[in-house]
Image (cartoon, rainbow, N blue to C red; front, side):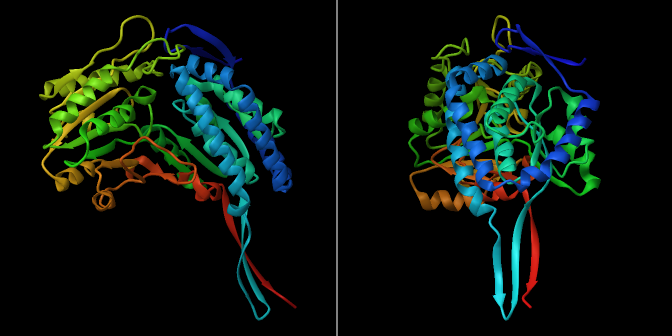
Length: 457
């Protein structure tokens, strides 16, 4: 029997060994999902909503234990795990409130005995290959609207968040979702590959560009729904009229929250030369005040790096920046002791010849670059193959709107950062991927339109 070993990234200790799937079990589960999906789609929407409402109750009831599980297997600070679960409740409420309108049949013509309608029907069986950094957010962004709209879901959580994935699945089953309609596939890359080989109707993936490219190649000839959320190199510009201390405190949190392991973490900062020095001083002071340590401690802000290989990438970006003349202002090294640790790291005097300003860091590492004016900032913000989020700090809304209109990004922020709302679509351009989750559009993405031409006798 295949197994998956789960380790605590903060200590390296073995947490558990889970039974894992293989190609045969994945194929069997996919067949059962295909057989079960029509009956699930035929149930009343109200019944599906009741299941998700009971799932929400389960999350509330078990929130502390679920948070501790997530922290143990990902290294996320416990308070941030609690924040993720509490934030999930609002997303569930949004899906429950909006699914009826998003999935309603529209009559677009009713004239002279001829009626035209657009019906939203489920895709069928969808594959969800999910992420470890926000396993509840990212997983449920797909699972919940997919189930509400009548799909069956084959869910492969990241191998770095498999215990959380099993908890999500257990609570859904306890809430009334049939086991064959919602299946959790445990394992690493080979299980994901086996899932992609199944005759599914849609693939929804969150993760790296390299894996996204492999997925696109694997399913590219099958003409099924493909959605890829692939991260970013998210920039922010601090204008000369911004308060440097307020902006620095906000952006330090945006860069280092969840140990920098967020798709929308602030990854590069451009500051107008007039306030650059004041901003940098306040930013470094803020970062040095972040407490690193045991993720289970309630006052820990900086936790462990979930994936050990990421430490090598962070080391390489630090070495590259130093070699090319950047100024190291804080951190720059792995943490001591067992587990996967990296110090919150800040560089100034950076430029786009350096990897930390071009390639996704996905860790507590940030570069701050001085710019002469707005045009220079926009040029640098767009000098990337990514396009997930971007922000501007200024008291002038008009200035912010003009600047952000010129930036290629799926989400833009004025005087804020690292923020996601269930009411707004989450999407990107370029290597940040294709498709979207959240918002009413993110509900409809799990359906396809069926056109009805109805002539009355």
